[in-house]
Length: 340
Ligand code: PLP
Ligand code: COI
Image (spheres, rainbow, N blue to C red):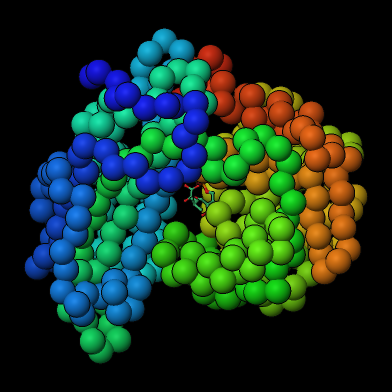
């Protein structure tokens, strides 16, 4: 498919309408066969479950052009599985993970002209989502749902590309101890909006949310998990039942251990020990791995030795190995690369 006339190198992280989107409807207890459509607008009843009680979940993944010109996605089966987990927690019907991968494949194929070329640094962001669409006024789950996928070409999530970020420890909580922090529900993001607007107004790039129960441990940011590197070169990531189980993080921990031969550890990480780490990064589909130079905890500045100019050495190795795998320059573990 012919490439669209887009300034790939200068894309930010914003919505650009592409040609086709996938839709499947759930009614009378079953999903229909699904189809690609052109209309980007959705019409629904004023009382739709999603509008009244925020019954909506989503996923995020990317399609890339590899060095040899193939279009691929990265571990889409894990997004499909996570969406099934999100649906179960939100009392929504599950969309089978195998069908999810097929729907992603169809949608990317139909928008192949928008997949940025190899070497541009951009990618096609894929947004699967599902919401309750029939009228619901008593507090209960909807009976009818729509599953959709749209795509949009994107550049880096954080402005300034690979410049290290400054993060503040938030006064707000993201997730309750037995709440919904571990699933990808729109409600988690709705309640983070005030916190992110406040953080930006105070000159910070993102929030570090501590655990709500004790406010002593590191959880995650509004849209990415944390990775730390110790002075001895060990890669450490917070263990928590209330953070989103990031696919990028799982992949980076594997890369650290099996490709780079580093020691890795998933454990409680206390705010008190932040000052002892050598490097810090945020990892996620949108963030890939974005270096953090500084964390500010109520006036107390923690500056990582990697500084505010460039990625730390280990963070860079992780970044280069992961993107090398995604772009087809480094051999991927079995099943990680899904060819469209
Ligand atoms: N944490 C949150 C809150 C997110 O929204 C995301 C983005 O999806 C992540 C972490 C990273 O997850 P993944 O690597 O699966 O994209
Ligand atoms: C992603 O990384 O895919 C996300 O969904 C994060 C979002 C904040 C853009």
